[in-house]
Image 1 (cartoon, rainbow, N blue to C red):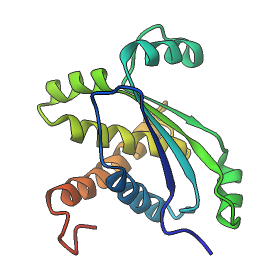
Image 2: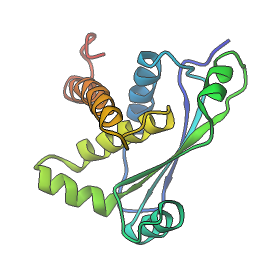
Image 3: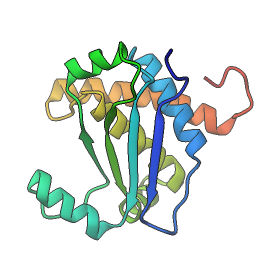
Image 4: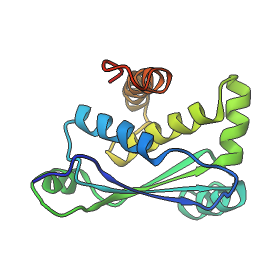
Amino acid sequence: MEKKNPRININFAYDSFRISQKLIKEIFTHILKKEKTSLNFIIDIAFTGNAEIKKLNKQYRGKDKPTDVLSFSMMDDDEIGFARASSRSPLLGEIIISVPYAKEQAKEKKHSLKNEILFLLVHGLLHLLGHDDETVKGYDEMIKKQNEYMAHVVRRTLAPSHPRAW
């Protein structure tokens, strides 16, 4: 029997930031359902600073600078399909977000840090599910999905008790 929600593990390495694990589970569950994939996943999330994400960005992407979000998928498309039929909870992957970088982006975009973090979480999850934004076509498709999911996130965070928020 499939679980109702993915299991989310959050590491708040950046101590001054907190976000509701319940909200993240609700958002991820909605996206996984819309993407017609299993809810039976473990997803690790780490909130960190610019120095740590810069090290990871250099090590794994060859870019010696901080970034907003990194996603490390632990499965390929075939494994994601296989996991649908499995009763175990495989690790889908890890999303790492730089809180200071996200703060700067939120300031530039004139919205809240919470909205920016939620945007980056949606972006990271789409990468874990195999979406790629490295080509023009992939970028366009990913942005379309991201905007669609963010519309639900905004509705959900503005009207959490409304039954049609999702």
